[in-house]
Length: 163
Image (cartoon, rainbow, N blue to C red; front, side, top):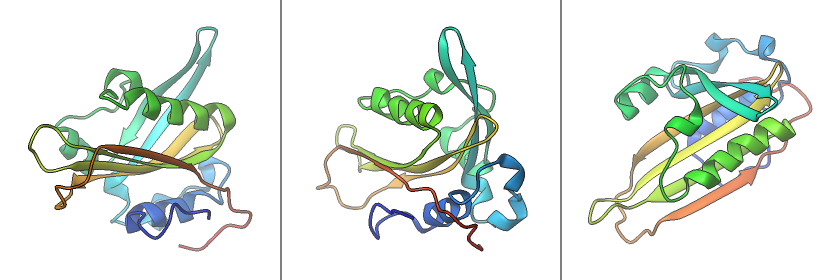
């Protein structure tokens, strides 16, 4: 896997290592992902139409529901992805859907004098028309960090890796 360095969240790396070699959703076996990954797992349906590509959450893990203080399952990404880099985040998801690719993304946001917060995730395209991924959200102790945004394309593995 082409990784964005040693700083990727270990759970995200585990999810990516499991998902990247797979091409079809029928190859996914949730029990193989492990109890540390399932709560941060998400599945996005890709709906293609004459008016473009729409991305709708099919499933969000319980840790993500708790983080966002509500269930977002069934909602379109456009409805809740916002903020100063919301367009960049949406562009990453749309590119993965359109190019049938995979990415790692991290955003650090600091609002007023609060501690910096991060959202880090991976998303991998799988047939038929889904993005599988995982998302880690939290706070950072280092107040000197500034708002940032990074996205890195991940290479698809050739052989299925054991988890």
